[in-house]
View 1 (cartoon, rainbow, N blue to C red):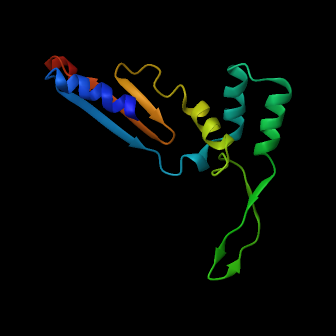
View 2: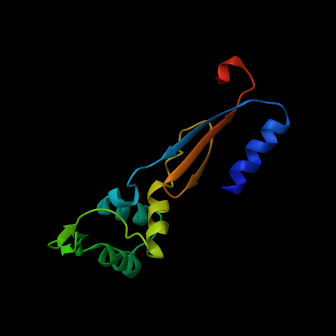
Length: 126
């Protein structure tokens, strides 16, 4: 986040305007498809026992909630990375790592918050 602010500050310090888009992905951690995540991990070279361990970590999960003191039945979880775990944010970042490919603007990814920005030097940049 600091790197983003420093880059934008440098652009503004040179008196150039900046266009920025802020993306906040709602329920981003909850919507990561396990099969796609595992395929990306494999594409990044994570294979064998480590990949199998991550697959087991994501598999056979369930969730329950308490509403007005009543505990719900357990329901299976088919997607998402566990929030509150050490591995969850890392897996999410791996999943979105290629989000900025093909975009000509600069971008910074911060878990489920992403920022795209571009220095405006001409009318064509707008």
